[in-house]
Length: 136
Image 1 (cartoon, one colour):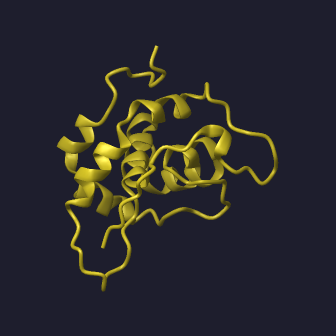
Image 2 (cartoon, one colour):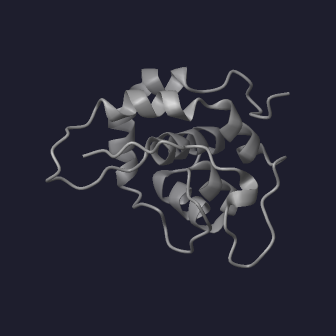
């Protein structure tokens, strides 16, 4: 089952940091998040799921696609990707978490499911053409 998330874009200043401060809008991951049409991707992604409520709730498209984009840009293995997301608030922001959390957002084995659901064509079609992701 998949529950649509109407607002996939949160602002860096709305991201909760338990240790104080706020995220910079100039960070490359914040900038890249503005370039992706999360709502459009969400609409297409949600079509791939059954409406049957008996199954577990699926991970948001922002988390799935965002994680795969981080992995491709940084060259991380599945385990290293989850490790880096867990310790980096900018990566957590990029995948759509509302605030910093110390526990991993998903198990490394879920990345296999993300890749199967999204597929290489859909993944490539949602990458911004600018390789730096800064919009400049």
